[in-house]
Length: 259
Image (cartoon, rainbow, N blue to C red; front, top):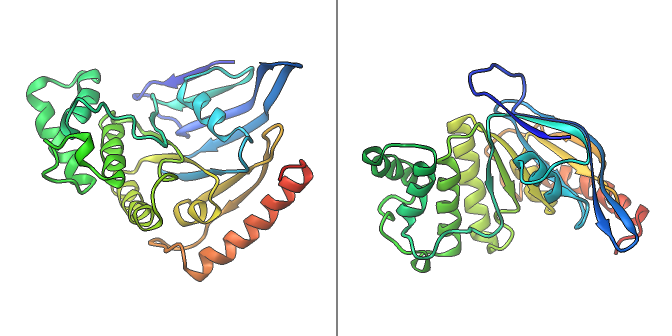
């Protein structure tokens, strides 16, 4: 019933292992079942997207994997403590971009003498070289999310959890950040569990798409995305698979009476 973080020194076959997880919350009419008997593995270095209608429990499941909450039943294990990136950048406005990243390094126990150099490396990785001294209000929405990504990467986790991090961005900026995330994932070997309600985004990014049903959330279906990277959101194979997934998603929504 708990989330456990495997020690980094232990060789494991998964980045995250979710076994028969259910989650209920207290409601006006009693306990409300949000997630029901979900089992899912994320392999080392795998990019998995969680897809489903609003309210199906995607973010709830991500919070459970992050250890922010406990499952009502079942178990979750991860290879080390995951890093979590939200839809909102959650940067501290009184700190510069660099200092926001350095804070994560400090909490990780990195020596003060090493933090500036590591921060500059991370800023260069997310293509924000020279932005160390910029305040949050000086950054565009896309730049803020890049800093938030760099801060998440500063934790040196093997698993990156992303909860609709690009949903609030305009289409062009989102597309650019899709490219950047794909590049960084390939360069770092991270495992990624990415929550979205955007079908094309799911197919654009992932090696595997997992569709959750609604009320309660269950694994309804999975797709392996056998399309070479780099991909574009308008590519014909991406559009074709997105259409197939959308039809299944619509069926789930109709079946559960959502509009």
